[in-house]
Length: 624
Image 1: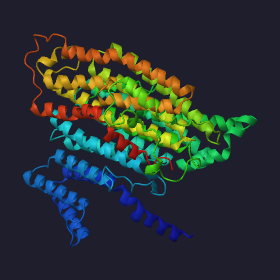
Image 2: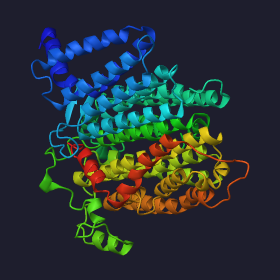
Image 3: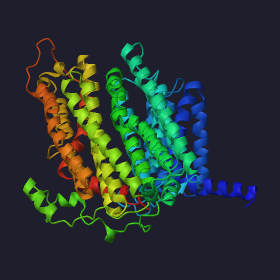
């Protein structure tokens, strides 16, 4: 193949295959360009709208409303035109531009079959293997872009992103979201590094966005210093691994590791230096991932940054950054440990997992099981999933990853829960809660890697447990930090003691905060209970001493977290209201926002099946 043919093939692959699957990210990029251009040129938006209209008319031909995507484009264009007409002679409202861009990108991220049918989403590498498009990518795109839209509304309501500085904040937000979408679809070591940095650098600035506030500047500086150190270590680990194996492509890395026949190298005692370099590179890459996850011992930045930054930015770091880092951890952990050992046939309906976790939680008549006895009876009747007993060339790789993740998850979960006890600031308490929940989520990844060799369906179930956890976690943490932000504006404090007797003056907000705290704890009948239960089920299915140890540690930590979560609920609902505080109201719209965000915590706790269905679809083509 000559150079000309190679270039032609590359262009054809990019234009015909890759770009059509990359539309949501392109829309985010276009939104960023519009936000920046409108800030510089008053007339630029009108020109951009005219060009967009012309492009849409040309693409539509005679069928202007032929597809849902064209309808969405027309609606978005109409909103932008109205926004332009309303703001004639001055800068357009960046809130409208950011919100429309986020929603439009989310619409194009939804698979063709909508949320009920993902059969057309099959694994496909794009951009010459740098990224991968599959149901896992689709889910996290929708997750991150939907969260971005909710977050845009939140910062507008709290006043963090006003009309003057909104372009800067929304540009940083969308830039970080773009990097996180790439993290979820990364299939190459260099893409991983670039995506992590693309998500991190805007986050450093967002954490210090509050002007003239010393704590915010300190938070941004600490975050940037820790992030730079973690990125350097991670990049060095990437260079070691790529240099040793001669590739940076994750599936090819797994194939090269399988060719090395690591079990034979270990048995013969030869190539000790090679094995040491492999282990060292894995540990260095894990440093970068652990930093994004705020996992111990790379968590030091998290409490200080959460306290110094605004509560709204804390919500973004707690939810979006955590979700993207978890998706990347799954990509790396499974990507380098399963090549050539998984059945290449995609799963179909009649080959579903023998015991779907949520099905175990439902009685035969479809009603939710009412007590633990019923849950135990249904679970006991389920078929036992096979364990990962067969030795394969990648078994040592999986064993190393499982043990590393298990140790980090156990320490992270325990440290986060124990340290949350002494916190008097609600943002620091939620920061340590975030650390603890990262530990719970990592347990599901460890279980997935344990099952990946012999039981890919079981591994998909474990990943589905993680996806379900994240699906309900977004409502819990976004609701919690939204309440903190609204109360900060109302009472000017973020100390837990100042929330005393809040239920008497702000009953809706207080009830929602209490529900969220109980759900974060993991008590039924709220959604947080099912999230933890599915992770525990994945640990049982994976079996083995490491998984059973994690199960025991997770159970103990759930009991430990009971005290500090309920302490917040007790302060809000039982403690007397201070006389000096006076009347308190967060306003009708903020109360409605909190109610809408927290309501799914109750709904999906009573009826979790829709979220579980989406979680199963998200992991459907993960192991191919």
